[in-house]
Image 1 (tube, rainbow, N blue to C red):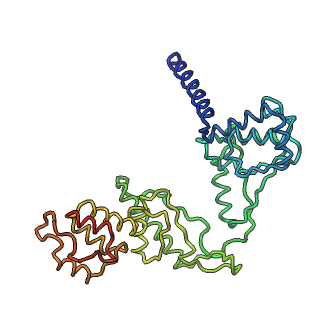
Image 2: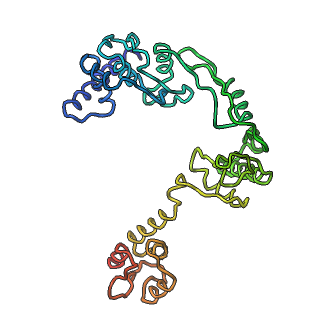
Image 3: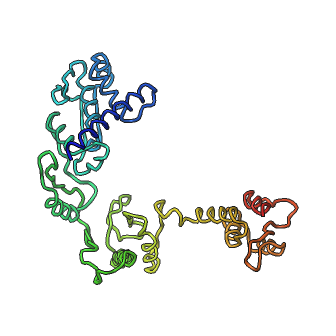
Length: 351
């Protein structure tokens, strides 16, 4: 296997380099080309490093856990200036106070972009000292107790792979009424043979049940504007969905429970009224014999036809009672009415 893979890997590496050279020659650089080109420039040209160091005397990289090795080397060589001549960035002496890195290794999720915890830990080891921000201003002691207890066991330190877990300290006072954390799904539903659709419906019912309990029992939330605790309202609650497939079941469960809700832009695209209206119009244009699509399009906000308009449209001879393809879909108006879209009129004329 190794003998077969090596030639292929060598060919791929040569092809990658050849393709990069071709993009450079034609001026069609990709993002990675820009990074590699900038790194090569900083490695070979001390004047460029000195000029950039003078221009950017303090560098701050936020969300450092998302930084890839090339981006880190760029920052180190700019901070090091003319003297940053070492081949390995780890051997470059960075002037104190010139480079600040802010990040959280627990949020390192961009491995596909070459960001890794290993890069974070190497920078932590070679660049300056570490200052930890451990006080949470967002939540309350019971929530933090749960977080510290769970993730303190889940996150286990591994050399060059996983940093140690740092517990968070609370800043806000304790919650007054209601549980700090409610765990749904800890106990499996009775029938393990439920279909995916039945499970989504059961999960949606669980969520609606907890929300109902919170509203009835008047669990408390902290009101930033009033600077006080008050009973929860429906508008204080946000439900985050990992996938849009669960949305119809959740909407049905909330409606059945009498819970008011508003679906934001993450709703199913093809279920939006605007998209349904456009699809009906396109179907009517594509098939002038589809009376259902034509009527649906005319009644939609795209055209705004009322029942009186549709009555006159039918009386004018549009449609086919037998269900066969109609050849009289256009209304017998002398000119296209302003509320009738050009696409529908042309579709009728083509029929």
